[in-house]
Amino acid sequence: MYAGVDWAGKGWFAVFLTDDGDCEGDYYPTLWNLWRERGDDIRRMLVDIPIGLCEDKKRTCDVAAKSYIGRGQQSSLFYTPIREAVYARNIETGKEYHREADTDFSIQNQAWSLVPRIRETDAFVKDAEGSDRVLETHPEACFVALNDDEYLSHSKKTKKGTEERLKLLDKHPISTYEDSTRSPVPRSVSHRMHR
Picture (cartoon, rainbow, N blue to C red):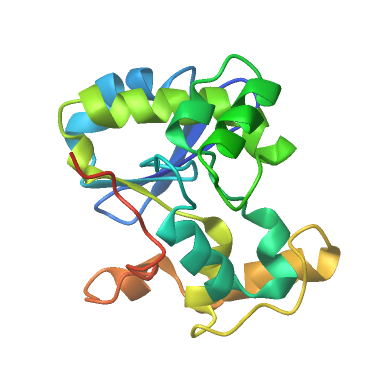
């Protein structure tokens, strides 16, 4: 079974692709709850939250992903704060850590709003048995991959953008990747924390 997971306001929403090609979804308060309930059956879990934190610079995968998805979609992908900033008590302190580390970027509000989830994911991949099956992903990078590595024409926030993405999903049914050696997410965009 494969799982795609994203934060959904008050918990994690997971979609599971079973070995017989069926899809099902469920909602979990924490990644730990999801893993305890379904982890033994999951071959690969893709999470739309940063995994792996740098000490003093932008993550290489963030830079690559921004380039890969193109200028028109870059607002949907933020640079992940450095480790010390992720564990800061507030955004002002986090920004100070960025200045002290002489990073060439500041913390965006969107990134800071996800800091509790980044912390949870950071602890989860460090401590959970089998977390080597957990990878970071980004939906917009996946859509570019499904679009033969071509940039998308419309923002995901528009009706045309929604239609464009739905057409790509229709064009690539689940069975397309069952026997394929090509992952629907380029390796340069997918980042796993190495211990």
